[in-house]
Each structure stands twice: as structure tokens, then as C-alpha cells.
Image (spheres, rainbow, N blue to C red):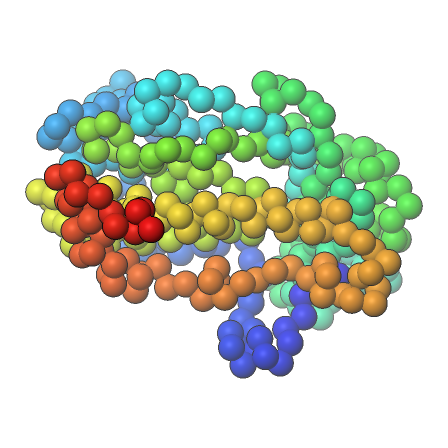
Length: 340
């Protein structure tokens, strides 16, 4: 399976696509934040969140840090969810885990079975099987290589979420697969393979704390399965949206800004989350006989509503009407759309 840009897609989207490591995006964001004077403190473990009517803060390494609002981006293991919900919710196993590997491509370049994946620049290739899929990509002009394999997992969610992977376990799981895949796995340095449990949490009724001073964003608010290919993208959309809401609201209306952020983002995120399950099922439960004659049956769905969205323009466009509706509801005036 490969990603193929068809003529109509090229005309509509331009066919732009880049392979890369998320660390490179982190570096770009880091450098920009530093350039505009953001105070970044690494190695700070947050042990508690707190809020009152006038502000919110965190306790980090014994120090209280206070601000107008707190944006909690502490991931799928989020502890900030407790202050939002009023109780601790537990993650649940999705029934799957994912092997992840990243390593230099030197050995792959020497092997005739795999050289074509790295010697001519970056590639992205996938293989599907019953209830399993394997994706591989080269980056940095073919110099580095990564692969992931989503597979069934019956281990209890209370166990470690990640553990060193074993090449022999992956090969056993992929027994009978094509020689290319086996060659990729065999070339993987043992210390570069991890087995990561895929967990999920039930959708939250709200992402905003009771006093409206703490907001969950990213995986803390809405964990994504890897097959959505949207976890990082939706977190960035969250960040863009909340920044604009705070900009337009101003300091005195910061609480209202958090409510507007949630209202603008909530339904879009719920729809995007569902794509993780639908794409996984499309691949893992595929009719492979049908796919031979109809390759589109296993094509990665990339809908315009998902990829063509401009979060910045959208937030600016709908902020005023969103705030107006929030104010009406607080006065007891229902949203007429909810009555239709």
C-alpha cells in the first residue's frame, strides 16, 4: 500500500506531503517561542493544579506558579483532568499496542530488498494484514528510517504503558509477511524498538475547570489513536484556537475565552477522534480479495473537512457569535439550534 495522489486531489490540495520527525517540529516551535520571549522551563514536574476566581496555577518542584489561566497539555496520563472532572478517571486499553522503531538507514541501504526505501530520498510505505498493519518511512533524504506496527495486545492497562520491544516477537507476529517487512525488522537495533500500549479515555463532558481558569488541550483533553494520524495536528489546532480566543477576549474575559475555545473545538475534535477507529477497522478488517480489484477500498481516507481546515481563520470568524451564544445560555436563553 502506498499513498497515491490522484489528479483531482492534486488539483484540489496540491499533493503536498512531508516525512519528518516530530522532534524537528518541536525544535521549530521552541526556537520561535524563545524568539518572542516565552519563558520556557524544562524538567519541571507538576504535582498539583489549583484555581480560584482570580487566577490559576501549578505546583512544580515545590514552587507555586500562578497566572490568569493554566493550559494543561499533560498528555493522555493527564493529572489536570482530575480538577476538571472532580474525580480521577482511568485510562482503558484499546486492545492494541504498537511497536515503534527509529534508526539510521545504513543497513537497509545495503540490502537489495530494502534499498529502494531509502536510497532515492524519503518514502512512505505500508502493509496490511488481518487485524494488523505495518507502516515504514524514511526521512532526512533517506538517512533515517522509522517503522510502526499496530498489533493486538491483551496485557492489562495497569501494566507499563511502554516497554523495550523484542525483534523476535515482532518477527513472530509478522510470520508469513513479505521479505521486505522481515528485512526491515531484522535491521532494527534491539535498543531502538519499543512496544507501546495504545490506551484511550472516555470523551470528557467538558475540558474546562469549574472556576473556568484551567483548560485541557491536546491529548489531555482528547487522546487520539495513531490511525487517526491527527493527534498532534488537533493539539496544534487547539493551541491556535485558544490563543486567538485569549487574544480577542483580553485578560478581563479570560474565563469566557476558555469556554469559547471549548465550544469552537469540541465537535470537530470528536469527529476527528472517530477516524482513528474507522481507519483502523478499514485496514484491519479489510476484504483483501476485494482490494485486489478495488484498491480504493483500503485507501487512507483524507477528507477535505479534516485536512482543509484553517483553525486560525475559523477561530477569528466564529469567536464573536460563539461568545454571544455562551452569554445567552448563561442568562437562560437556549441555543435555538439545540431545539431543531
